[in-house]
Length: 79
Image (cartoon, rainbow, N blue to C red; front, side, top):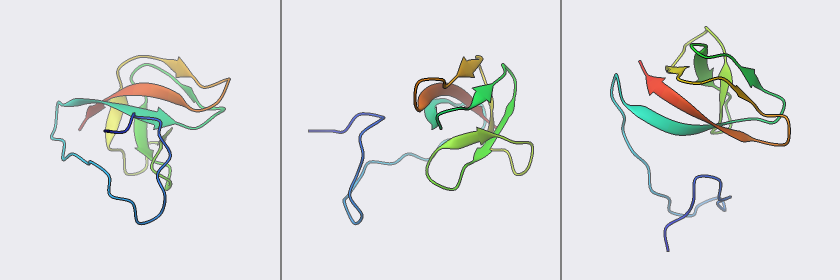
């Protein structure tokens, strides 16, 4: 069965990936404790999640999100 956005995968396990282009909107994960403002630049967190950062951004937050109770989903528009 296909995995969910927040499933943990084992090292070496095959996973489904996608290639996204400018203007596409994707669901992404930000780490616990992240406070993301609407329109904030998002960049790789180095672990498969995104973080608010203007350094090497991959997209912008479509909505504000606060990950106060663990990792959270954020809608990201790819740049």
